[in-house]
Length: 153
Length: 153
Image 1 (cartoon, each protein chain N blue to C red):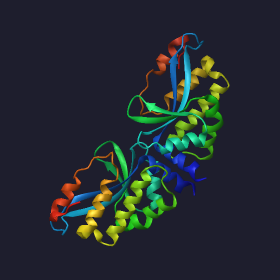
Image 2: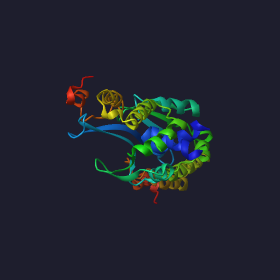
Image 3: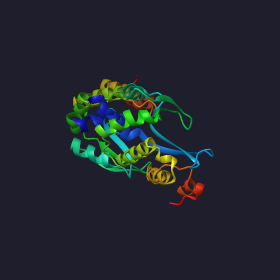
Image 4: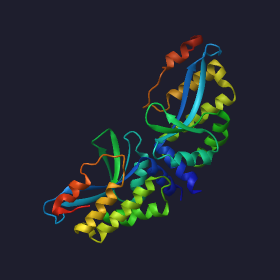
């Protein structure tokens, strides 16, 4: 299917699999874990983002506040597990970004089985997340993420 | 063919079809016209550029002096006409960048029939080139490109 392979190629260039962490004092581990698949594009050239929205049938397109781009993003865990991850298993990334995808898929599966609510599960997720998007910025270090509840890597 | 469609999707994100002009006082029109197809990527993630080099069987990969990226580029007119352009006719871009590709293909065809060495031919090429990559920077304006030999748009 042309569009399917095309969108994988497009994602290899412009896409991002990330796992972010937000402090939540009410959660037992101290952190909320949020996986996200996103693809950015200049606002004047958003056709492919629209195509992704139609193809995946989930997620949304919104302006990225950090710059003058639009972002297609899927954050719902069910949609990630049922639509996004199976797509990239069938139409794989061909660059080193495939490693990020595989770690991302593992994190989503761990969250599905609610392992992120346990200390060993969170530790595994932190290790996987910190190995992703090495060139990007991280708001929290592994030490900071695991200092709650005296977690240690 | 998975790789073919994938590379078109990748190009939609990271690729560029450009036509550049260099002053050459020895040429009758005053300008050398150079078409180029290029795709950039961070140096630590060059697998897809390598794949492009193998797939197209032409062009080369080199560091981009403007930043810390690598660039796959094809500039040879024969290779553009025989390998790159037929690929994107068969596996088309799905965004507005397709318009740039179509203008680029026209420019290459005009150069093939040596129309760039004539004043009306150069005028057409300048019009097509200036309509491409609108958001990018241009070293020369249409006026500057056509002032040689008193060309006027």
